[in-house]
Length: 220
Length: 308
Image (cartoon, rainbow over all chains, first blue to last red; front, side):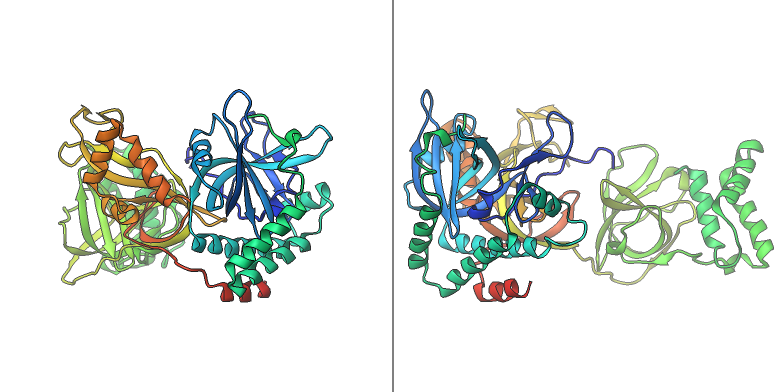
């Protein structure tokens, strides 16, 4: 099996609140083109993510060429998505979409350091598609389950990424479990509209300033 | 594995219940006869087998099925195992090499598996649709796919019985996270028995040809833990996207570009969850059935989450 096809990186399921905390990145080899992983604070490596949320705002923040930023909100916070000339399909999707809309995003974690030294985590999208509420609910349920599973395995012997998370972060994985459970409970209440509105308020509170801080814009 | 080695292992296996014989010793004796004394291989095999029969105080017909195990094709998950199968010959393919006498697909109720028979083994020809008992075949592995090799010691018995062939169906669920190149409106080589997908109007076997349009999607389903590559053929693609071949051709004609079809399809299917069922072929699951998993059962997800 010496020349098996390179394996595709799995798309992790992670809520925005955890994703935005995943500021530590690493590679598994010294190869120049080795994939870069963001370390999830619940103890998992992540070279790709898949998430579904509500696109609440979009803006062309580019100077010379189009560079689109989208805010995509889930029950725990906001994902920031940036697409420019090297992601033409995702960029044109952001240009065309009218918020609010449910969108599904496949993309790569990207980190950048602001002038004041804060590490911000964003997503460089591979694809963005408009989806329905059922898809969004399925993602929330799935992501809650995956998150809780990661937290449950956090203290397992030999959980290499949990060990790394303990070293690199000062973050309690139980907070992500609590957020995941509360996201599921909100779904269970079934009152989607009210739930979404509350989520957005909470998300805005958590991440105030992120969206409007120009220093937070990564290079295209 | 060399042919001598194969023979040696088969012989050692046949005596494994009766004598303490190892394959290296058998191979050495065969090698001596074949290479040193120029004895034809089947004569050498006979002679070596006879001497072991004598050691064991056995008659030739007591040597039945040796130690190989009777298995279903779906249970084969290890390289170089000696096994017995009860199978139907599902399909014969064109051998790609002169050393191969027959190649094709065998099946039993658990699924199907590729088989190869070599010219040098001098085996009777198998007939499509016929059921057989095959004893002493060797398993083989290539990039995670298993096949079986018939060999000189393989006993082939026709059986008068219908063996229903299963389809090795796998069910995979996940979000469709990628549509790979070679999806959408494609052209296939029109040559007989060649269905290769053309790259820039060229078939890798037949060169420049006038291709025939077809639809397919090569996609990736991802459940957050594993990724599975899946192929939707024309029928499954039409069902998935609601777009037929004619519509796709019109769309490509209007845009003077075939890639618009895959883009349009991607818009409808990327980022959605699907559950698909079908046989696995190499790295791909070939989609026979597809369903939208529908609304999520939040209550059971909550119960599960609280129990973790």
